[in-house]
Image 1: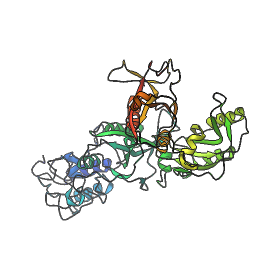
Image 2 (image 1 turned 90 degrees about the vertical axis):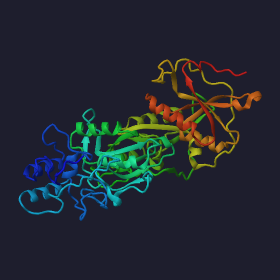
Image 3 (image 1 turned 180 degrees about the vertical axis):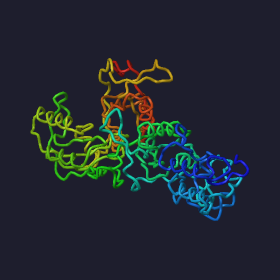
Length: 485
């Protein structure tokens, strides 16, 4: 509630607008707690309502009938800034300013949200969620970065986060989130895996320390309705197209797709002579902090060129598709090149791919026939990559292995697109003429990592993929040796 007689500018609540009020707001505007050790008032706090006076948005004062109350900027975000402090300071020394010194209306808080009343101009349209638009706007103050104390090569944009909300969260709740964190949406990603679709948001600056940025990150993570939050390195944000970030030496933009104008030479895999790799084709992911010059040096060293990329896969797996100079026809020469790429400074990962993956990415005509199901599966007596279900730790799964059944009407092209999307390969299957509805492929995917949440999200994404009838995870021990009648 708003105390009777409280006036705009009187953040201390002593009944007057004075230089102490101006000093506190001035500190809050630059991210300093005042008094020391106290949190900076956020929307929903009385001090924020009475102290955030600019823009004035006259003639109203935030009452029920006002179309846009004081403090809401052009983006409908409430931010502390030096104009708040300047106007309160002027009022304190006798220079009359709009809003400052006026009585705060009793209905200045919205009873439904507990936040300052937005007015009709800033009210969301109905209860619809903000549109999820792919891309990113230029950032207004790109120099706001902070270095991770545990790894000084990691530099993060300290007020930039990528946030996914629960599917059931209504638009009004998302608007409340934006108000609480004094944030605005600057872009988004609608990936092919719905669980990773997310908004790119810019918050008020938490300050230059890692502790302040991490505290803000933890608050966002625990906010009701938030299912995923990611902080991003400056390199990642640069690559997404935000201009003017520190280190103007930008890596090449990642363009999704693949363009190869001539056949790629092959090399036979000695571990399985029925398979081959494309000996000049690699998929390379760089660390977030890598500069454009380093990527250029990489291309020069390996006499390589970029022929495509992927910028909408799993978080952390954005990568370039590159063609190198031909290492020669032997597996040893090919593998030596692969190892050299993996060790190159700034390289986060490198993937070598057999021809089937590259065909599925669109370079060559796709085979519309469904892959044959070969009964059996490899012997995986003690999978080293496992993950336990936190709800019942007795259930431990081989996190790379699954069985997948596709609908009878699913085409071979759709199955190959599934394999490409999840970086999977078929290693066996189960084919039963007497019960064809149980026919399925045994697949091994790229390791999703040790987190149960990520493993489960990939599992759920596979279940929801086009053409899939069911997906079965693989508890450890169940694939000792699969033999079908």
